Length: 136
Image (cartoon, rainbow, N blue to C red; front, side, top):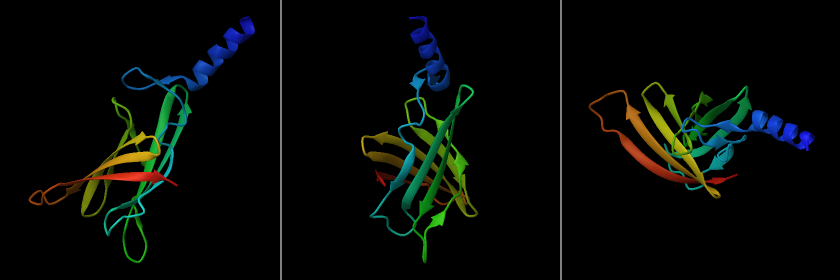
């Protein structure tokens, strides 16, 4: 019996982490992996890659997004992501002519992806789109 308790204690220390809301989190996160949008139009999200790992009681996550460009997809580079209180992740990507805030949450085999395009020129409108990406 003491061996089981010790094993459970070690498991909880190594894998039982908590989110900002205090909920239990296990690594890798459900959103971890490669997600694709096979119907992407120009300038839309074509792929999102998510990596998560647990270290010393914290969850480290990063996201890399790709948008449809010609002749090949443009990539935004790896950026640290934040855990959201209601579940899922959020990342802010900055580029030369604007930025994007991407919020993702997994529902079964779908990654619900909300993208807010923020132009640097404040006179231009912000554009929000929702994509349902599939696990690759």
